[in-house]
Image (cartoon, rainbow, N blue to C red):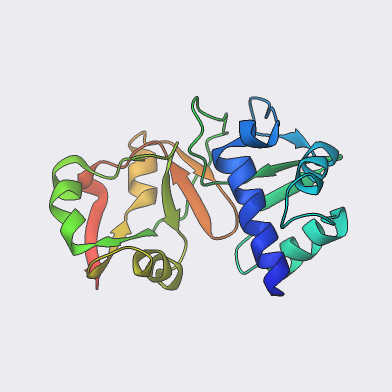
Length: 183
C-alpha cells in the first residue's frame, strides 16, 4: 500500500478506535460517524490534508485486514476500540476454532484468568494461525499461539461477535477453552 495511505489508515484508526474527541467526532452507540465529518477532520490536520472518500475506499480495497466499514455515508472501525463505554455488537456463532497471539510471559496469567480485553473493549481472536502469529509478533517477548475452542465455548454460553472476515471478538474467554498450540 502507498505509504501515504498507510499513514492515513493509521490516523483513521486512531480517530475511530481510540480518540474521536481529538477529531471532534461523536460516534453513535454502534461506532458510526458521518464520513464527511471524518474527512473534514482529516482535512484540518497536517499530514492528512487532501484525504478523500476515494482514499478511504482505496485503503479498504488494499488492506490485508478489513478495518473499516463504510455504509450510507457513514464509517466505523470494525474492531480494536479502546473507547470508554462499549460499542453494541450482535452475538454470532463463531467457527469451532479461533486463535490468539500472545507472549510466553502472558501465558500464566491467561491460564489463571482466561483471555480478557485488557485496555480494549473486546478480546481479539483470529480465524487463522498466521494472523495470530502476526499479532503475537507485535508484542515484546517470545510469541505463543493459543487455540480457542470457540465453538465449545459458544455452546456453553460465551458470547462471540464477528469483527471482520479474519477477526472475531469476545467479552472474555475462560481459560478452560484455551490450549497452547504453538510458539
